[in-house]
Image (cartoon, rainbow, N blue to C red; front, side, top):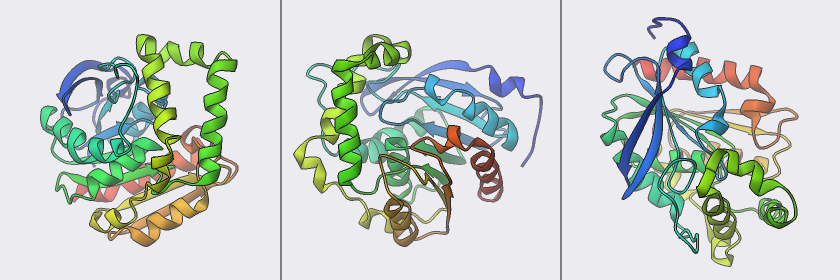
Length: 273
């Protein structure tokens, strides 16, 4: 993979906006243009945003020589708001993976891409890859959910209670601004909807033919090792797994050296094909 320029080109983002999935989405671009290098597309977690990735996209982009596209999903950060009563359908991840993300790739004019997703974003990335989309050459899945687990739902219920009892709203508002209520309530309420207990996309993973790096923390409060085992079992293409010792739900922060090295090494081969 070609490396060009200094790290500055990945550290200084260009602000963008796209229409995808029927909504306006805020995005940022770093690094070389899509015509000059593959692109890493970052999909954030259920309470995440562009800013909450911190410097991870710039680090991985600089290490691989890829361009980087990071975006706020609908209802988050600077993207179009999720209107009151802040309700998401139980199949929101399927909608984003099968419709919104392909439309975003089209709108951005992307060719070869690797998807890097965290939590809900990782699930969406895997669903997008399950279509056999030729542009998607690889997926880095960080703490994905293939099905709902009781322990994970209990953790979300605790966070839902903290919303009204702590400064959580103020802390999230730094990233989501006026979108903060929709970002939080849209996430928490759909996950705690009784209908969501039936969520399971294991069968869909047979359509994932590209290489997958599945990463999870050993102390993840939102998902057990059963998630990463299911990815290994269900995905049709080659799968590498990494259980990050001592890390929770964000191993890309809590175990960066090992996770960053694994991501950089993994991404080299499929994006060079």
